[in-house]
Length: 293
Image 1: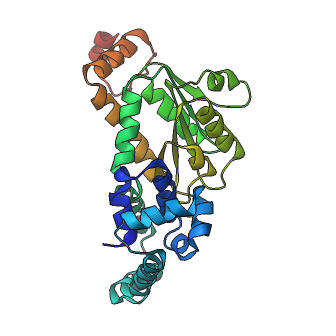
Image 2 (image 1 turned 90 degrees about the horizontal axis):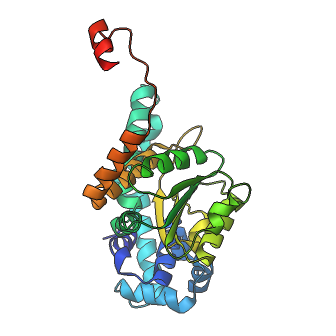
């Protein structure tokens, strides 16, 4: 089994410090592992002994042995006939742009199964379903719109959810209310924003559980995170959000199912209390429109 797959499979067994090393490795794999143990520890915000403990947990005798295995994986990946064939075929496929785009986007969705550790996803679901006193959801320049969507949907499954547009502006009071019974969800993708890192640091300092949803490069906000959910976003000309959308929908669905009857009751209350004027299609039969009215 490749080292990255083994790390991914064992994520739920690792200590918080070891998880930081694992995330640093997975976010820049295999390059991060080819650096010295001290350099990897610094990148992960941990210590060299923590790096060595993770290597031992993987059943590898020493850090040089770990790097030797990495180099062997790289050689196989680069020179494997299957790898060469796949890369050549993708590079030469300049026809059928729509079908190519569909194929690439589907691949990004499927990549969720290898980028998001199930143990981390399950922890996020359980934390949100446990009825925290407060949940704040914030995002960056583009991701604020997805943060808003996540907050709006979570609000129908659990109470006390706030979308935070400006965590260090007019929404600062929402951030300052966070405590050990609160959760801060922060969306931050490459070209990472300082405000996201600061929001994660503040929430962590106040004792809240910090969930960071980011890309495979890992936002600096992940350094203060209790739970990190990384998504592949490769796309042209902008990073793709298809994997992010699927992850957010899966998260809301998971929370609703985890809450069971309480979640359904919350949705019923929301439906009965919120009145939205609906427009009807001109193709709907008149008698049906009158009945609906």
